[in-house]
Length: 321
Image 1 (cartoon, rainbow, N blue to C red):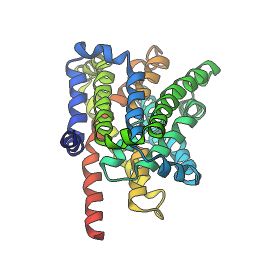
Image 2: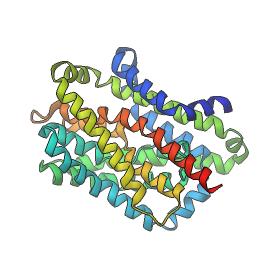
Image 3: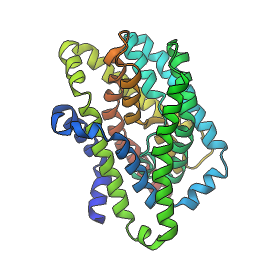
Image 4: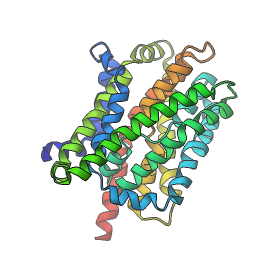
């Protein structure tokens, strides 16, 4: 399994792109996965939790200043900045879709991704927890404030999001923590297994999430190719901007910590973004599927950005040795 985990690590970006293309090109066999996105999101965090050093994560939690500062930038500052840029170059429905996906919390796989690019996985996990816990209260307000859409922060919506996040975060992490406490030898001896299973769960989630909106993606590409190309390049630029913003928001920290923050800023919870947009905006006649498409178009740039991030960290490490 160690060689398999190394293969997933080395070619992570290719597996992500392949999973996205698989979902977009062959949606029918993968349609059942869309119905189990919550399970997949939870499994990613569970397997990630089995291989994490919770003591190291606790040391970050005990000093919450950086996590809270980064969460504010992640959930409020970046979404509003990127949305304002989107309004200048994209139609209003697509711009709102950009706001929705960028306002999502850091992805549940951020700790694994930080590990892939040689960042501080424990800090990335804390960043995911901080943004996910704040998401039910902050994200609806940001979407409503930025887009001017009334009613997006209804109490029923907040309660559903709180329940969703509690299940996704606390159940799998609590189970992983319990296993590590009761059977540390079992958990530590199979770290490569947990890493591989976490990444495999992520690939399946990507394929299933994109399969659920494949028809809408093909319709945009077929009927409005110029708009599709423009959206892709905008999401690529937004991904690069969020990476750079994350790396430079705490220049006093180590390169490993700064890369973890970069991952937290740029790798949003796309699965949650797609579910949110479908449930609350897809049936709105003013927005429709346009609110979902930016989350789809962000997937490939996010995966490809792992290549320069990893090379950058490897060069830094080589220069300091």
